[in-house]
Image (cartoon, rainbow, N blue to C red; front, side, top):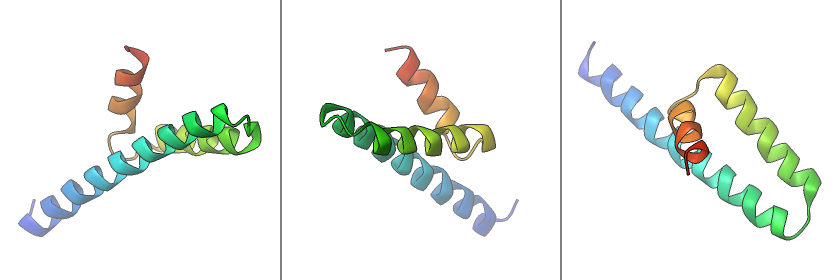
Length: 67
């Protein structure tokens, strides 16, 4: 694997981790505001990323489930 490929994978992994954390936080904030429709869309996006195994979504999900 070339350095450029490795670096791109590393960056994608970090970006996807930030996206997942942001989605989770937005979901929590929106649930408090009782905006169930937007919270549901956040969960739908999370599910898609989980199914496609994008970045570290599976690891983040496991950590959240073990809290």
